[in-house]
Image (cartoon, rainbow, N blue to C red; front, side, top):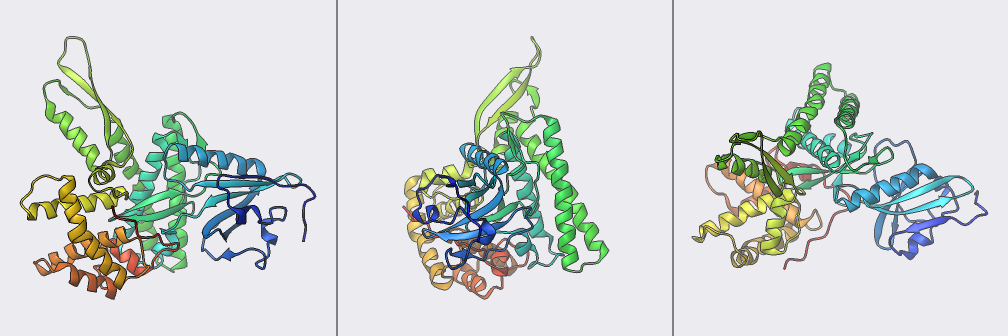
Length: 420
């Protein structure tokens, strides 16, 4: 086994003794299972060796690559974290000076899905799940571009997906080619979009070939890949369009804010700028904050810290709970009763019937979705118990978000949050 005579340059953001003690002087491919606790985690194709190590009760992803590339990716991921972007968290960097290579350490993103595992277990003629996936890809690229990040290699293989209510949230897991700027030009955005479309088409063709699909299915997948650009442009326009209208027409302002809120964005500031001196026409400019409008509102009412998609479902459930009790407004007292009387008992039943399966907030969201879908089919409210039985039996409506969990749970499950 080869070792270096020099000491490694080790940078760790968390003081984890078991990480410090790993054999950093040895090439990653030569690490011995007798010395290191590896975990077998399926990954997509990668230009560099990636291995997963369990240390200090947590899972870490290790990637070996040239030192200068590793250093740049480490700094890019740290800057994305500072900007609050959905990307894996850089945990450390170990450099072997004599070999001019390094190992990038990132925290394993638990409870996530890889697209191959997600789509290979869902029939290709079931488009609902792919639509969620493509919406997530478009949303991720919009968020990166809004914050000045040029990805340069946006693809299914470089993305992990996490369920968030009835939607998927995409997370960047490979930033080798990423560049972080104060802002991006339209040319940089367009080039990133072109890369996304090409890579997405390639990933879907590879999937269709693996599943031995006929040419017409391949054509359908290519059409869907091209449509991701349209999803991106629609979302980008919603965030950046500057409509003009008469100053006194307040409905336009209210409509613009409501549309952004529906997309999950809080509006930090609204500016009305006169188009021409002496004219009634004004241009509306909305300064948009992060995509946590409903999540922040739910946190204010309940203390729960959940995803935006989950928060949207939970707020609707809370509003229904309040309406059944004759209240047309949401306040902290109503929210506390909702948690105590409805959510906590349901979570206890989910823990009993689906132990360790998934994030329990997401499990409750699945319950809400399945109950609504089955109630629509039955023409009446079927209640929680019937929906629970459907979840346990795996007999949920095909095309629902809950069907993804029934197909196969993701690896690295998250724990149930502590309710306030």
